[in-house]
Length: 479
Image 1 (spheres, helix red, strand yellow):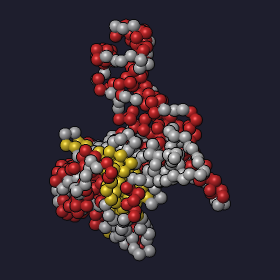
Image 2 (cartoon, one colour; image 1 turned 45 degrees about the vertical axis):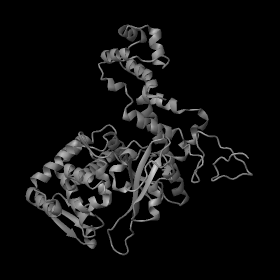
Image 3 (cartoon, one colour; image 1 turned 90 degrees about the horizontal axis):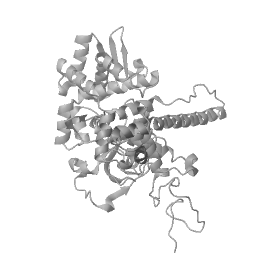
Image 4 (cartoon, one colour; image 1 turned 30 degrees about the vertical axis):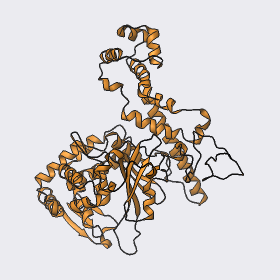
């Protein structure tokens, strides 16, 4: 549905919010109540003159009548929700979902909350059944929303940019006189001289599996010997953030998206990580380097003494007004396809309630560990994205310690690809090089996909036992 068709719903929502009847608002606008009713039901256009009058009546900026990012995210999430097989026979259309999000955003969010609770309860019931089958106790099975999801929503709502943390990090770098080429020594000196904290490297046998442990009474910060130098720097900056910017973190974690103590505690960890990245990769120098080196992640990691994943995260935070970087999306998955991190700054839709499309190059990254995988992807809304992916491997521990392997996927609208080193030599306009990618199978229109795991919600399943297509669910043209 076009954005203009949703203005009637917005008018209705604003009128109801102010407790006005159609007759009251019609008088203020100088039109008949019948004509206003037609506008609210999208049967008459909202003229520019009436739009200006509405802005005066409700004392709003005209931008309030445009579709918001929250509306778009809610609509994308609800479309995925209604892709659940339980809604298959209810005839819900994309237009229904978008109108709901525009006219009743609170109701849309409430429905998302309800569905999340249902999914969590279903997962808990499955976990309970497994534990009972195994003869184990069912203690700890909970049907509450995961703190990680609430923190992810808070970060997405802020578009992963926190100006107050950026300012605090820049202030610390100046006051501590941190040399970018020797950040560890500078941070350790700062913690010792300003806060009386002794930084110690401890052996595996002594650290009891803690990579970082701060004893506030003894004023001792212990770092495990198995942490590589870049991780030691990051952990020092992280602890410095917890000590110096706690009040800032407290203000931010009052966000309405964070409903539990666990969510707020996890958010503080995420914000301290943000602080650490801002200390080790200061905004202006990092943005200048990113542009100069054309977003070469590995080169930036070497220059700033950070990891591949840390650089990818930092690139998604470059949202300072007037000094923006490329708007990236980012996700992290494990070998089972579980998404442990997601953020969309590019506008791409990332699955929330099911696995990501197997055609995303973040999955194929596991086939070539340590190598950059490049992909041009066309999503169902016909927007084309340029994406890179690479595996990351934990390098802590010794021979007997399992090494965790995950994959990071990052990308942007293809119009920005020319500014990235990874696009060199690629024909970005070549339709044959574009991979059709979906969000989830249930919402995807790419019926000829050989990797389809479920039928599309938009197309009924038709089985022809004597004919086999590229997949069980792919239609085959008759002779």
